[in-house]
Length: 68
Image 1 (cartoon, one colour):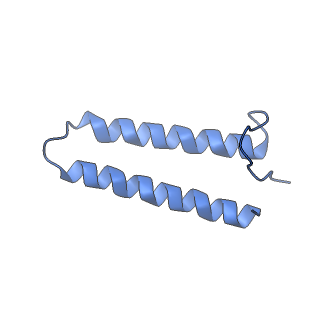
Image 2 (tube, one colour):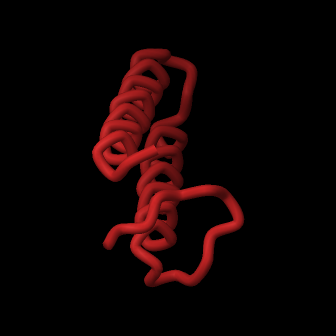
Image 3 (cartoon, one colour):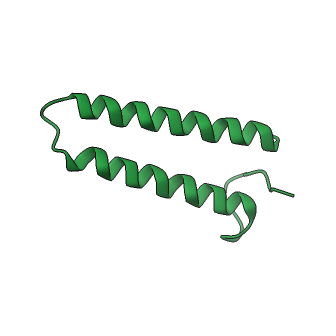
């Protein structure tokens, strides 16, 4: 997997997370704090993956392409 494919994957994950939060926001019985928690978790996960991909956060246990 090259760097371009990795960036496309990150964009797709962001879109899926946004759709999931939107769907949860449309359900009336879900408290307002739940979509906020999902947004925070999604942002943290994406940041961790990007930091591992660039090598800033150390080595990754999962195969992530390195930025050169």
